Image (cartoon, rainbow, N blue to C red; front, top):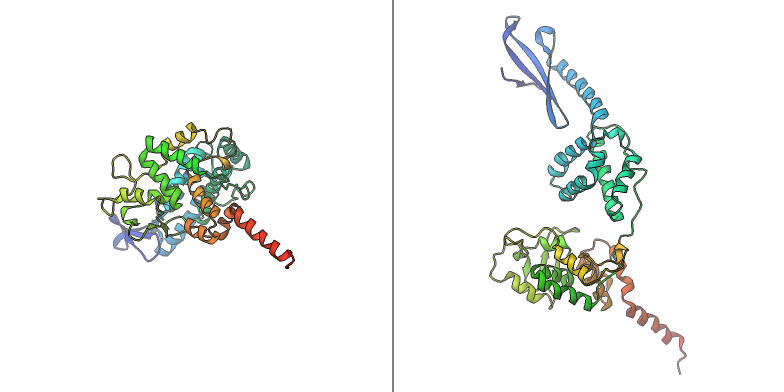
Length: 366
């Protein structure tokens, strides 16, 4: 016999086709709840045994508490991650889904996936950090932050009762700012070599260098986002919100070529099939930088030339040209002035001219 809802959450009635009570078919009270995302059913009792829907609801609550206590002691980090991924990242459409999945697969699964939540502490997390010794400090911090988010979500969902093991080893603020920007000669060398080896990605680089866009923002561009008549590019749903970038004279012929004869909904930069958007950095860029020797002898990551150096160069050239910090921040899509302050020191000539004004004040007038 099919189950029928009662007015109590998770409590259902089910008539027996064989047993009778007080001249009517006996009724079973079934209860259900979820454990690790799976629905669990249990018969709380029969009406002939004195069970009622209200008492079945109490049985359900007690069973859920018992199940949660069992989850607390046996859930592994891998199981917690699976719940976090399905019921939070995927269900809520989180933008960090791809990066978190990659982080777990590459750096967390091997060491932590099979361990119960209660068995993970500073020792286990420091082992993860040793495995990631060749990664940047910021990447290692992101790995610990993902562990923390998983634990906190289990706490909030009442699937875990315990301490979050990252609290004692989370690093403080990391100085990960890029220090180096390209000279005009270095930028030309990179673009010329990419024009020869990977012309499509050379144009990707030009959009970053001449408009200041991030790599993900460039890959998200469609033909409809480029407005040649007004000289504007719509940068939609970016890291700090949507904004408009400006098409410089150096970038105009590149974009004219890219949009000519194409439909508005097409991706501006596509993979080899001509339909799918580009998604990852072209490794030819990495090889070109290597072959040109731009990173030879440089061990500090902040001084090495990477793709983001193009965006950093865009801002640095503007500051060297005397463009105000606020304007640079607007063009970069920075959410705070603090993010732009790193470029303040680049306008040396501005500062020299400002200090020179003191001579007029100090010098006696004849």
